[in-house]
Image (tube, rainbow, N blue to C red; front, side, top):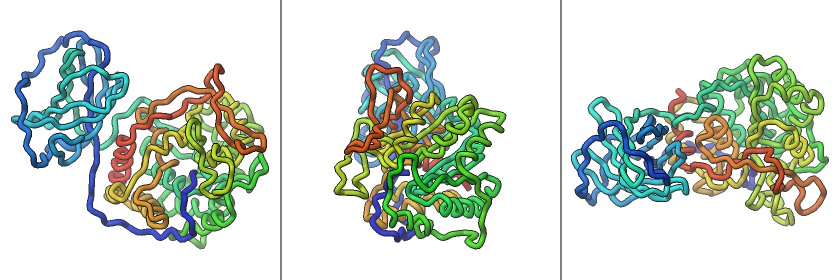
Length: 481
């Protein structure tokens, strides 16, 4: 969860019908290393200047394209996403190549169906200068040619509706989801429900924005309504191991009311077990290693590891939204007079639990404020989500309501983004660091800190690929009928 920065309980749900404004991506770039000459015959592309019309060009090749490109013996994965229209001289999108190399594309011109682009905003790993060409082939695929100081790269890409996947993305994940009853955490759960490669075994609620025993019933009703009545439910203790108060009570009352959203199956109650015990039983009984996703405080996991430390052996990885590594924290969102400008809400809500989890030896991936601060969506994004089914519409309702209630035209997607990155590591560059958390009472209480010269214990997402993340959500929700 993250602070939603709303200042009243009313989260009116408005289904925006704004004009669709796409700002998508496109990709191709040159390696900083000079590569060998290609072994295959290159297509003939004129080096004479292409036409540069002043009107916007309608791209018949708009969409998401993925495939393999080769430069000599070097083979690389390429993802290209093109917007529907583009003005010559404008950025038409971004690119992502597995060298790694990424950046943005400016349209130079078009001639005889061949589009020329110039790479800008390039990552440090692709400094070579060159030209990039795209052409729609008769078979419906996209021909990709990149020519420069690095030699010549050739590929044929296929149009798809999903972002190019890493091995982590395509593998089936047996998953436990744990949140503290936040709006963005609930939207992250909705996102995971529409993922075919996720086997969601359990949903737990920790003490944070919500009182666990109350909010978990809302989640049970929601899951039942959407056709997932067999997912196990867990409620954590109504407090923290650190004994601090955390979020203000008026906010928890809003969570008690399910944030003003319609409550399906309101007359029903659902069986719930202690959340730490749920984690233990699911992990022990699973034939496959279990992935954990935590977007609230880490209280329930710390308790589970205290009770049954042997479950470490069957946990594939832990993904966490939380922490502020090199950026300010956000406790002051609800306590503006607080001198603590360092801590993020999730570690702050239970620093002792955070410390125990950080020291657990698990394979861990953290998506902190450093990364989530860079990614925001607006109603042109949620408008496109609504092409999907009922789950996608509810996710759009959540974010449209947050934007309406706060008067903001854009909104952060903390937990939602973290759940997407969990399923696709290509969406963020991870940096291994050794992190600790301050548990002593002070203005730094709950701060995540980097410990230099220590063996890294956590892989930290610091450089998210913003446009790919936003487009991935559009693809996932809009195709979730």
